[in-house]
Length: 259
Ligand SMILES: C[S@@+](CC[C@H](N)C(=O)[O-])C[C@H]1O[C@@H](n2cnc3c(N)ncnc32)[C@H](O)[C@@H]1O
Image (cartoon, rainbow, N blue to C red):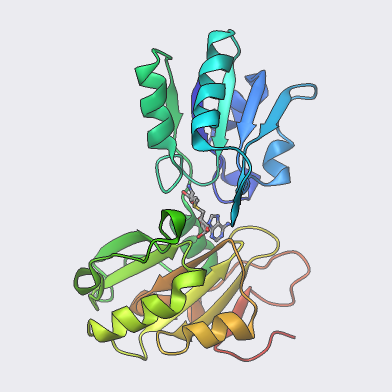
């Protein structure tokens, strides 16, 4: 059994090992954010099982996924459990690995490029940068079952840090208020990166004060990360990625509209 990170979308960002395992697998069990381009690397005729969870409703429970993995492994299949980004970063890879261990199923973990790193790189935002950011926080902006966010806001409100929120669009107003209350400046740069590394990538440059307005103005939707910190302003100079068909790098300034 291989728990494999598929990276953020661009198939060329897969590791060589992930690409090889996809071609050798006889069953691939995959999540919602796996791109069609990545699935296209699976050999024809191989069984591809979708177990993704859409916001608001669950396609397959975690328990049923765990049981399926054990059943497939015991049946002797070469199984790739394919997850978006990295399996051990907000991907429940740890939960699945624990279940496999407890059911005596051997496994390997193949890391993938997590969304924060990929979106930073493709948006032209170094997540650490001398003189601007010395720490990096990766934070889930959503809790299981819509439980209110319970984060150490004082620790996150560090002007020398970069904070990357995953899954935060629905709680963005709460994030904004808490970080402002904890002492961050309203004009702190923020970048919203939607569908990073794909041909649909968009990056909106905004501020902590304005980020909610920017999300609404530009109709930013999932999947997106919110990069908060002084480094976010570097996208204005370093944006380089031009999705197919876009007239310029995928950079949207403040809340102006994208023609
Ligand atoms: C359940 S988490 C999975 C994270 C994944 N394991 C990783 O390492 O990137 C899903 C969240 O990751 C972020 N995400 C994943 N792919 C993304 C992409 N291509 N662009 C922007 N955000 C992405 C979004 O915040 C999305 O809501």
